[in-house]
Length: 289
Image 1 (tube, helix red, strand yellow):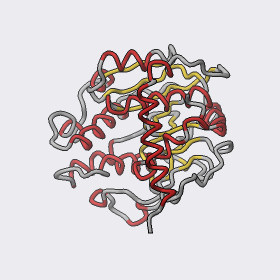
Image 2 (cartoon, one colour; image 1 turned 90 degrees about the vertical axis):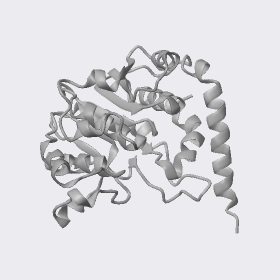
Image 3 (cartoon, one colour; image 1 turned 60 degrees about the vertical axis):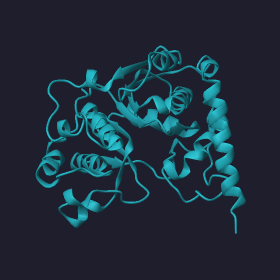
């Protein structure tokens, strides 16, 4: 039997993305209210193909979290000058910087093995992202967000976490373990899987131990090797899981027309590939247009 709801949602998502992309020059100039400041630094990693998704991500963040000190879009190297200008038009806090220009000092091994001329482009992009994340200096609450995340009215919880007096880091729980088990040395390390698409840090993260495992145990990285490095680093630094009822990563509603979540109450949803079409159907609700 044909799942009419699922296929209708996929089709509508394609239409919404097409219209949004065509109107992108106008959308970036739509006012965002209410305007409020947030003492947060934000980083995202994306590419030319993701321009429209990145615009929606930034606009929803500003709408529901606030205007951060800076929102740095880390370019994988593919953003054109016109696309960089489009992103900067959203707000004065936004800038687009090439990934290598954000790396401080030499890129450590094994990251340096995978960031230039690596044959698998998606894997190379992940390691370019990690090269930046391991290099960023944390002097205030700092957020990393993938571009395929939308923020919603419950995102005031993000401000509360960033403004609290503790020094905890917070990670987005994954819906399923997506790990490279070659660098998982003990069964307990598989528990509480981390998704690398969103996290909050307030102090420097020590990346050394998981990177040493990669150097010693991995000949060639697979799709989830980089995420496993983030998973191990977060747990080694006693990071805490974000509330799964407010910070959503789920594919349970993949084959439904509607989403399972009340967007008036959640902080964000990570629209991973299986539910990417729902990202576009949610734009009006999220206030990103």
